[in-house]
Image (cartoon, rainbow, N blue to C red; front, side, top):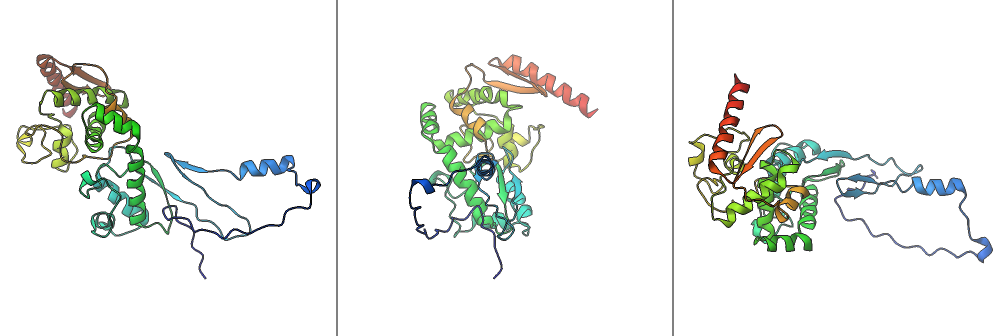
Length: 299
């Protein structure tokens, strides 16, 4: 019979417990030598990948255990990028993971508000992959991981304090993830999102428009802002209908714990230099500086 290594995305089999005879008395209790204690310590090694721990059982006499390959899902990746990476990692034809995720029989453990769309719930992390790993099992594990991370009481209470549902918080976090130039700016970007929502202002985020146009760019034209789409936050007020990517923990924390400030506008003038302001004239000046920098770079 061909040996198949266990998949980290399948439930472990229950093993029959064997009753072992007890030693005749206290004098027969085994004691570990120094070398034995060291062997126990070394035997407790775990492979840790972004909070996901996969125990590996290594034996000398048994069949060789397959070493897992690493599949990295960066923070902010869209579902389409994750599907492509899954297909490549598992050696499957392009489109397999997408069809699996959207198949009626898959039933990923998504919240009802997601309407069956896994965008935002393919949690960014490093996942161990084996030859026996299936796209269904891997995607299900990603969604289950996101549901556990997003389903804590801390997140629920933080969302409620901001007047949002947990799903809306994930949507806002996906925008923060896409818009922030660096992690340190996330809490400020989140504050801009909250301030605009509180004032019933359109978010006017390029990231949501780029999602509608299936692209990634920092150049947005006037014609782009006229695009007819529920993700066009230049034309429509409020949050878009779904997340626009898969946010990480830090972006989600920024939404439930935004920085203090009255900012309504921001623009990254240069890498590492994001300007936040509540004054529209100052914002226009910052945008002009951004355009000048862009023009110089292209020239």
